[in-house]
Length: 372
Ligand SMILES: [Zn+2]
Ligand SMILES: [Zn+2]
Image 1: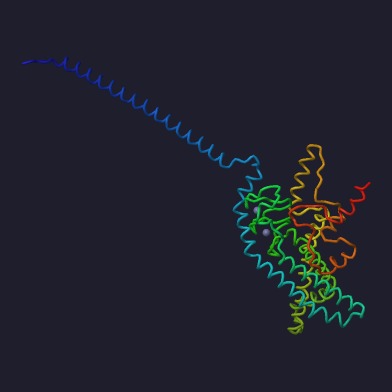
Image 2 (image 1 turned 120 degrees about the vertical axis):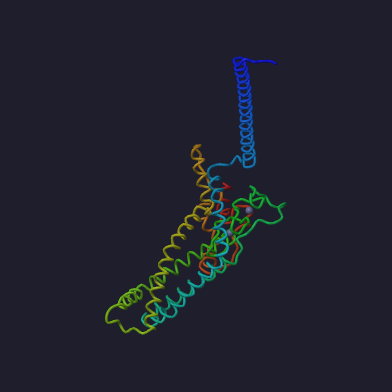
């Protein structure tokens, strides 16, 4: 029978514990090393994915024209989408509003203003008011009808016979000079000026004159009503102020309706005259320079760009202030000022809107110079 001393037993136990401890430590170190390697591998994979994603995104969105404007436009795309859709769907409401408000003013003029003019004014003044008022009304109705029903002009569908100067990114089609894409109409418009919600139509090559004439004659009509109705407005306003006095005045329902109608007429006409007058002046300045609203921004940028290079920008569609007006209004001979400007005229503008040759009135003026 073997006998083991307790001392030997203790030493052996201690050695085996040390071995076990060393083995555990080795295992732990191995695990740690393995974990670190895995962690590095994971980080490397994430880095690779990030670089690949960034490269993929850049290759998809890369454009040599990308700048802060493009980025801002992209960010505001949902807002534009909403505005476009609201304008498109509310176009009919705006047109109904223009017709309704104009009709109400015309009705008040016939019911309230005209009887007073006939009773109190001299025959000469009566003739003037009847002639001017009806001429102005005719011009407003004619130009508004023509502006909403005339197509602004679109590039032809057959792309072969079209000489485009650029490509529309939305239509993926050639775009002639001065043509721009309307996001509300969702198509390219020839010599596009802007999309007018009050017409529910784009203002372009074929209806630009109708739009401007409507603005001008509407402003003139509103100024006419504001001036003619000023005395009546003062009296009606003073009468309305006495409504709440004690004892209350003894106005009939008809008199009260008359007072309120006159105040409504004057407030609406003077407000429209101010707002539309400013818009008409702005468009008149653009026509004088031979620019559209869109070209105003494009030309401004181009002017600044060339100025930095020490060059001067020249608008190729401007023929001089006076000629620009003649071309815009379609005045080729002096009698056209009467037949085409002061009377309703459905004549077409110069050119097709696809190419921009010199108009006849400009060519005639330049011919003698060329001969010299
Ligand atoms: Zn387009
Ligand atoms: Zn449009």
